[in-house]
Length: 473
Image 1 (cartoon, one colour):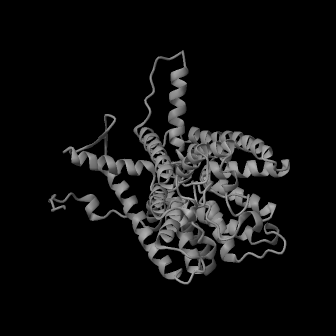
Image 2 (cartoon, rainbow, N blue to C red; image 1 turned 45 degrees about the vertical axis):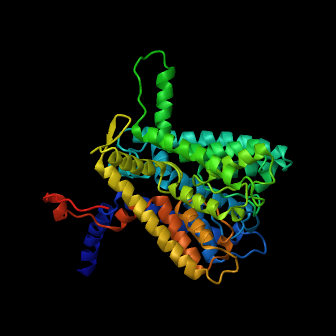
Image 3 (cartoon, one colour; image 1 turned 135 degrees about the vertical axis):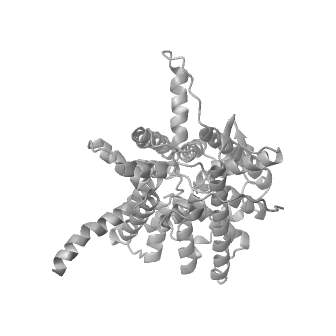
């Protein structure tokens, strides 16, 4: 009798579990599952170099960093992991950059399976798309576009490394690995413990990686808008005009402004710093300044020593890292469009406008509320994470300042991967804090909160209360 009751309750419990799997929870659980599998695979002896033993916390730290496309590492990737281990890391980066949901949906499309509404909602949440329309086309664009960009990037990088004197099998592996890592904004490298600093003056390697970082981090919705605009502009069969969405305009404008201002800032501030740019020719100074500005878009590669940056440069680097890339791409951070919405909200208030307007379009109060929520949560996480690390790393063997700690936490939250050198010396508590920061930074603080809460119809959502003003300022 009890067995029958148990059997009858099992489908009911499973059905309740399925109903509670909201898109936000699907995204969070999918990333968590890949991290666990990746960490276990990296613990296998075949994943590690001979005579190298990796602690479980370091294996899972690497898995979190790879899946969350960050690039912070507690062990040197080049000398710690075997070829198999590096392939696992590259696979984790690819899955983390494109998201398991997008890759799984692409697989379903190719075997002829119908995409359910729940899957479409999950894809919409994963890509930050504003509507459910065109989900299948967007997935195909993401997968095919990523493959094309990474293939072209890998080919050029292979030729560049070959030109630099690297043996062709290694040059080929370098090309493929770094193309995937750059496009997914991961920042992992397999060259050594100095990232791309040996190639600070190589224009081909620098420019290709910079392009891959920007293309991957600009957002897949922006891809679709730009490609559709080009197709309409070049088509002779139709006179219909296609207008790029407000989202894409804001993402492109803010990204361009951040890249340009960052390049100028680092060239002026670090130009005479002997530990970073002072010893380079003018052309290489400009290249290194531009690369530093681009890599702060959550990529994590470095062509100059981050530990040698001046304190003011570390501070502004932390702010750039917190902003990150654009929504719906491979980048992390608060995102460029979030920054744009808040700036437009402030500008509208200064101008005495009741509505937020940009490019002859009104922006809803809900969008501003979401943007403020993201910024407040990220700043709160930065404050808490920095506070914990200031306590836990007091006895660290690595000499560091408060700016180094802020830099480290900002790098984790923005899923950037740059470090001033403290990461390998972190305590167990410090590693766990950064792992959590990387995870939250990748899936987004709002997605995490939604996945942890159960939505109910509260009274204040059903009833409309009288409004009352309060004193501000």
